[in-house]
Image (cartoon, rainbow, N blue to C red; front, side, top):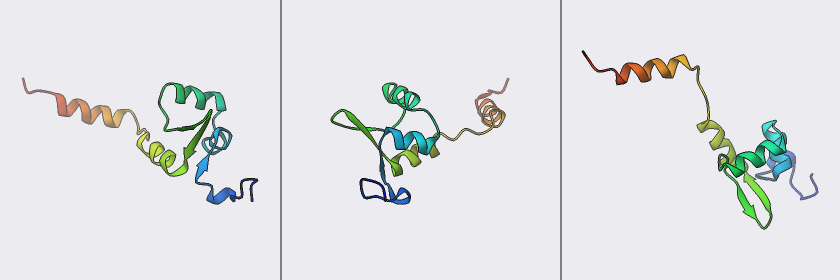
Length: 82
């Protein structure tokens, strides 16, 4: 159990430090993403909190496929016959 009474596996709301560990990126990068409004965050007073469910959904939306696949289909669909 963590000091807040939640086990690591069931923590549904994370702070900056926990999100940093969860995503494997630095806290400064997370603050930058917040500043740019690129990551879903809730502000409670002066602290940010992150819903694991919302972050997971955000990550799924940000999946990048191989660049040549979307570009080929994108250009093929926009070409006009001569």
